[in-house]
Amino acid sequence: MTKTRVPIVRAAPTGLIAVLAALGVGHLVAGLLLLPTASPFLAVGDAVIDRTPAPVKDFAIRSFGTNDKPALLVGMAIALAVIGVVIGLISRRSVVPGVVAIVVLGVLGTLAVREQSGGGPGLLAPLAAAIAGVAVLWWLRGRALPRDPVPAPTPGAGLGRRRFVVGAVTASAGAVLAGAGGFGLARRIDVAASRRAVGALVPTIPAPPIPAGAAFPELGTPSFITPIADFYRIDINLAVPQLRAEDAALRITGMVERPLEFSFNDIRSMPLVERTITMTCVSNEVGGPYVSTANFIGVPLLDLLARAGVRDDAQQVVGHSVDGFTLGTPLELLRNAGREAMVAIGMNREALLPEHGFPMRTVVPGLYGYVSATKWLTELELATFDVKPYWVRRGWDGEPPGVAPIKISSRIDAPTSFQRVQGGDVTVAGTAWAQGRGISGVELRFDTGDWQPADLAPEVNPFTWRMFRLTTALPPGQHTVTCRATDGTGRLQAEERLRLINPGPVPDGSTGWHSMIFTVE
Image (tube, rainbow, N blue to C red; front, side, top):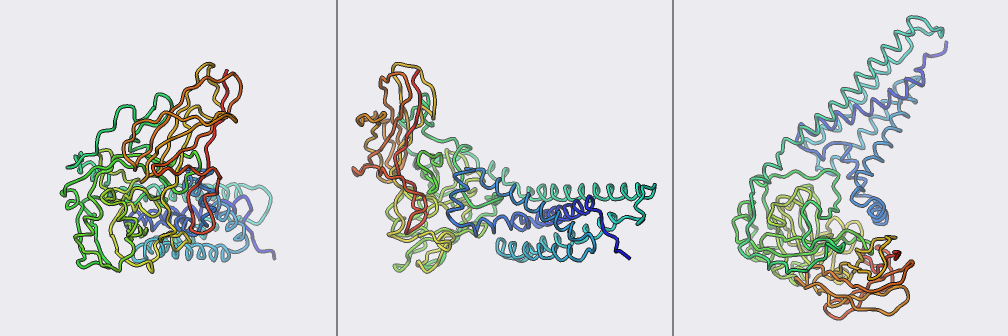
């Protein structure tokens, strides 16, 4: 006698709904525990990010920009949907293969959660997810089995279909509600209210005012100070860590004479300084958008370290984030930045946004973010280079002389690519930066002509970008404009376009002259 099998049209959605139920319940339990990183879906995504080779990360940032994480989540969702369908199909004759597959997924989720959140109560989320997945698969598969092996369409067969459809809709709705409940529960940590309670931040030592004409937004450059909501964001997090100011504490540990701990209010009550700083991501391509400027407010980082007493044999400051991320800043480079380096609690006289590290973060001007910018800061550990922070463990060099300063870069902001402009005088405007050295000159070349010096906007300080412009007459037709900058030491921007991933320390920052093609009508 042939064993009864689940029809394909019922088997596929059965497995898919079982996986959906597992994800929804896992997310719900993570929300109940107030541990968003314990959600199996997010934990696996974070584990994927951790293991992604640097060239692939670079490709994702180039291809998707700040949407790289949503793209990953969509890709994971599609992959899990396919896995769900496969689970349903291999369970047509027996539920056992599907149960085994879901248990395997549960084990993978448990390993990811243990890695991302350190285990503990968070392991309940993948356990609950696996149980829910198995239960829904077993229950819904039972409803999917034909109640009568007679193939002819009968009233009983119609009842069986309705029974399955009702079960599928019920299980799907429950899974969606569970997932939505997890999102809602995770928001019980009211970071927005905590941020509002910080209030306006007025520095004891304000930054000098931005001089008139420091930017040319009317010509197409960005405004000199980037609005906080528009500041670029590149990090490894699928879900923004949620930490309230009243719960935050900064510990200074490791190779110090006096381990210390400061609450957020301790930092808030210290004399605050304001620094105008341009930050650049090491993954920024030639002409790319991952550069922004803000007035950061906080306390000098070296002052806090001095209170703890740094031992002479310490080599780096390892910043620890609330989510377990670590980042190492060589002590030599930190000292070179001097009092410009800070533990920041605000940008543009507002408390930090959660996306930018609320309540506290580090900012070390002149260095790429992967060695200078720990968001959601909880600890500063003084250590030797034997301690390997997150990026160093993944092959990125974090030690002198491997860590180079931010490379000289310049970018044409207007005209934009393939823009058609009116004939007569054409104005080209753009932005240049070489944090720590400043910009002393920018030149433009039209087509194959001679280099012409551009007019520079007033310099704010050596740690910020500097805008440039040049107006010239051009004949009708298509033209190519190229820019190159010279830093404050007299060094010319490199012409050769190098990949972001170079031999030696990786990544190393992009090089090359930026060009734009446009048409004069």
